Figure 1 (cartoon, rainbow, N blue to C red):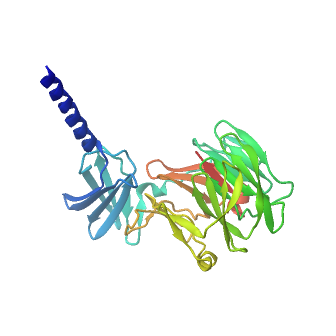
Figure 2 (cartoon, rainbow, N blue to C red):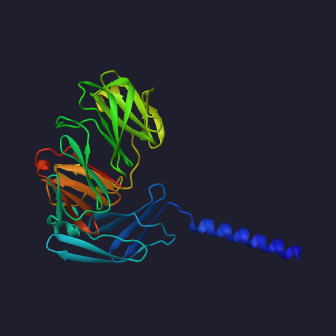
Length: 355
């Protein structure tokens, strides 16, 4: 009887080990052919992303999938090639991941739905802002003296200043917080407003060190938000839990590791915290492109002239063109969300988007 128990336990342990290694994510790269096309398929476990590179007719088509990891390989079952004059489009048949259609012509690469432009339809309005079909995000929109707080369930005004502020050059958003210095002070500030975007509530942090507005935010490490005072050559961090400011060493976070930075580098290059992303979005000459990290090609996502790249959230890309805020996803295409006439003239640090 005892031997049977030991055997059963051993089998359970072996089975558990097998399941663990079978289901565990692992990075890989492999090549295979589908008709006249050569597919390079890879998965990066650190970025939680699949990357596909398809070589066909002297061109390389690059795509990304953020679908859930599977232990299966050779995820593309078939590729349909459609050619019309100078245009070539690839359409994919897959089982375990989703891939969008991609095209090329003599000069560029682009998503197939690039010509499907969204027309803005106003469903509501609040404080001179026209509201279309909002997604599940929360929006904070600056109107020079207040923030307009919008989501599917709420429309509120978050009051901060008694005078108009036309340029919020120093401001920082992360997770469910927006940090705004007291812009009613001149040259230096010793108060910081923190807006909680879960409930539109404001809290104040009184700073024991005065900070010049000639500063910039570096990034955050958990709930510690870092900024560098260019006037004083001093790095600070603000502990949002303790509501306190501290002096810090001259360093930044690069891919999770702290690196020392000279004051000269801060002044000339203005480095910030950085971390490898699973998708690069290139904003160049008023155009927006998706790009696989370290990839060869930029894939155009819109024919519009874009004035501001607002946010990248997975494959959802938010941007302003003229006076409209759009959301783009390669599967769903373009969606017009909000319209505000001031965005024709001022669009920098005017829109902040939160989960």
